[in-house]
Image (spheres, rainbow, N blue to C red):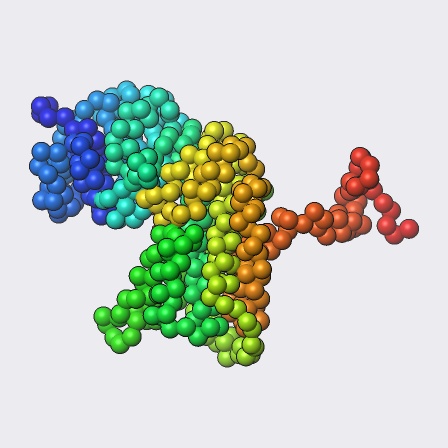
Length: 466
Ligand code: 6PG
């Protein structure tokens, strides 16, 4: 065994892994990387401070050079590669060692791995890392879940490497078992929702208001310095200003309108159905990525069903306010899913802490997250963000703009799935009486499924045919 012991180890020296090691080293800890690819190992050694950074293609050397308990983070693709790495590590680990999966693993895989390794007294953390390559290098938001006592070993390193907001680190122990991966999954669901809403705002400004990319860039820049300030609005302004190196014009106009997905948004939607928590804005975002993939069919259909010209009055201010309200609704949906998941899976999540660590570093960071944090600080039992009276004060003046935004899209044949899903969710949420009494009557009529009454307790059935 060599003398020098590294504080932290990382397996998988792709761009995220390399950047995370460099970030850890910049913040005062020594770190060693492991990858089978010699080029990646060499690249890290060339870039890292030799006092604090090393890398190897030899697993035994990697493990020997780590201080006990070993703290080993995996940044490898989710799925089988994570299991394969765990299998290769397991025989060589010492009781108390810690493995941290930093990928977007499905939460039930994390639970399985947690139980499997617990039998060997190895701690396993599922820990989402958000912020892309730049975040990994300069400070991501980190979402670890697992054994609380074991977290103390990784806490100083994660707190040093994470983004900071008002000096507070964008990382915290979020809860038991797969809590970290679950929270990251819902983070990504919200990310899908916000991205879709922004793309619909762009579509409306472009196709309803006839604005140029340069004009929209200015608008997004202005929005970013307002209450709508957020990483995704900021990068949208950047994107709209980028010229196309491969041709004339703007790059955004040359990009194929088919959005790919790796699955985290879909998992969020699927799981929300199991929990019985509606998140229709996120569902709409997943569905729009699916519809986008029918590029050829859409081309044919656009000839079959040409759009009619309709004059509708919508302003940039309406779209801005509509977007802000839809943002609030999207966060409300995702956070309610987390509230329910915490009960269902015993995660013991603290929603205020989650809002706090999402304020910086991650893809859904936004000025508004501080207000969300405050709402959960006022009431940690808040069932839905929209039930907070100070949030309600913000929401009420925005409703008309969201209505106008949705009607403009609908009248002009511009798809506004996420805006409309947000408004319809909101309208249902604020309806004291919904027409679902009729559904109950229908169920009882054709299937004797019974119903309850408003005026007295009990279960009732009517012989409707009589
Ligand atoms: C993040 C991102 C990151 C990844 C997305 C992309 O928080 O840094 O969410 O995890 O870029 O998962 O997801 P799709 O490929 O599904 O759009």
